[in-house]
Amino acid sequence: ACLVGSEMCIRDRLLRLLVININDLLPREVALNKIWRDDNYFTSRSMDVYIAKLRKYLVVDQKVQILNIHGEGFRLVII
Image 1 (cartoon, helix red, strand yellow):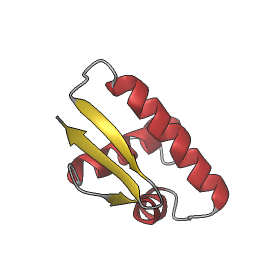
Image 2: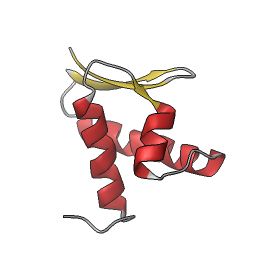
Image 3: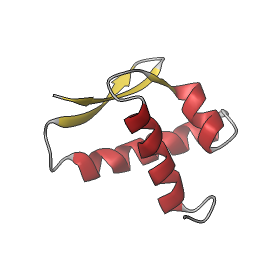
Image 4: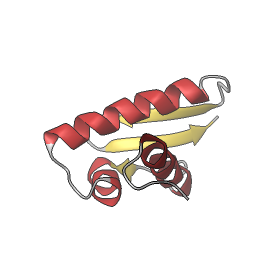
């Protein structure tokens, strides 16, 4: 279990959503509402920071990528 709102908890919940939707679009609004229960500009920018952190963790395996689908959301793919 993680502490609600903690950095680790947010990162883990975001990764879980991406894995559940692997190879499919994870709409930005869905992730924002499920994790932050808000979709304003500041939470949107926070999500971008967490996506960047996840990408840094995943860089060790070049087959795993988080793609940004402009104006839509994100897609976790395994090549």
